[in-house]
Image (cartoon, rainbow, N blue to C red; front, side):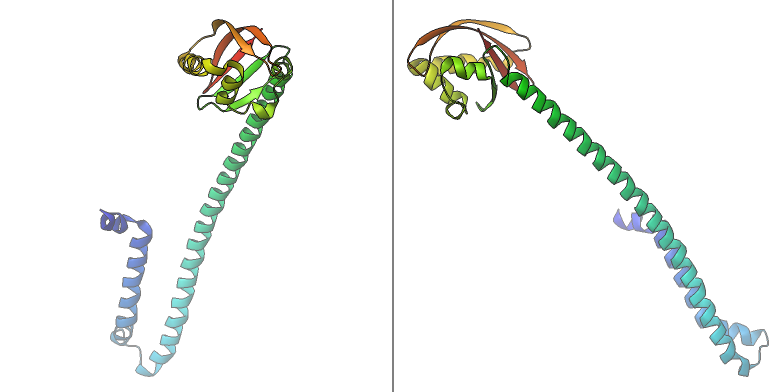
Length: 204
């Protein structure tokens, strides 16, 4: 399969053809010149001319080949550079969009918590922290939040939360009693919504 591809390669075909013609010319040119009646004393001069001609032809072929190759590579590099710039611009736009969304969540007047399916808390509103009294360092994962807020009910609450990742629409989770940092019990009304691979909880 690979040998067939190599044989079909135009560059290989041209190189082999040029090699064959050059070898035939080198081997048979003197005999041809003698056959045409060129005097033997002139053969040395003609051989020098042939050598110069061979070098010039080879240099010209190499020049045009390299120019074509460099032009192709330059176009490919330009296209790759354009694509890279587009990807970087898209990534920058996504980062800016995510940053705006994160700030919107943090400044939201309602308690909002966004977490990934593995339990990592991605964003949390200041209102959530202010009402519960917990710091952001204490709430880096869902396990930490459920341990602090629900205590012995942690596993039950966590199993309910895990099922919410199958949502395709917003649902009202109802009222749940949470424990704040100062020990006070608060009743929150939760609602959940799937957001990509994350889940957003809002409470009131």
